[in-house]
Image (spheres, rainbow, N blue to C red):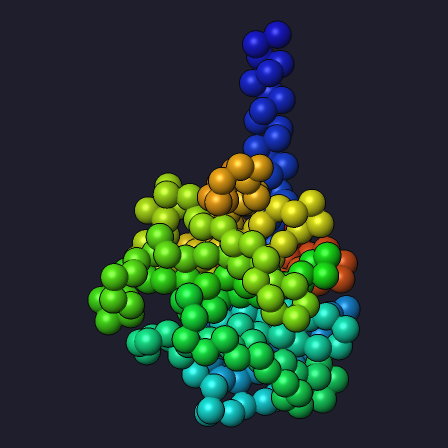
Amino acid sequence: MKRYYIFFFLCIAYLSVKAQEEVKRYKAPHARQAVAATEEFFFVVDNNTIVKRTISGGEEVKRWQDDRLKHLNSAYIQNDTLFCAHSNYPEIPMHSSIEMWDINTLEHIGNHSFGIDIGSCTWIVQQKNHWYVMFVHYANEGKMQKNRDVSWSQLIKYDLNWNRKEAWVLPKALIEKVSPYSISGGVLLEDDTILCTHHHFNELYTLKFPTMGSTLIWETTTPSPVRGQGIAIDPEGNLWGIDKKSREVIRVNK
């Protein structure tokens, strides 16, 4: 019986690793901050540049660039609109906005500015008629806001009119692991599980909302070919991410 349980848990661990198995990899010189994908195209995000490429062969289709933006940091697609978190990182004081593009034309079509608020905006998703936005703080020299460290990072829930509804902080153990950086990318799955990334580690963190208190629950850490930064889920349920060091876009199983 003991051997059976050992075998069972080994199978679970194996399946967990398989869930992050790489499907395809694309060379993409602008793969520095994030990626998002539709059925036919993926959108590579650099600090102030977005490149639309085909999933079939990785060819560039369109490009948008504007030096007025400082640090795009994630990508999320809904109803033909690409939403990106944006901040003035690494400048102090921190200020942030959400920027929007038409995915067909790559025309910039809008923004929502937070101004100087509660940190540096790193990722955004929408679920069940609410926005979930991550604001982070850092602890490395020159990028740390006075009297703030990584523990001041928060995930904020807004309604569709940007009224703040709820907020959660990171668990202490995860803060210690990611410091002096914070959570760079994230997605919200259908069961309200939060899947998020470090700044540059090859691993994903699974978080849950608490039933009491304000601290998110860190459930698992999964090895992944994705190396930090912004991640996204495509319509087929595949996870997309980047390797900033090698300038590659990576598609993995969810």
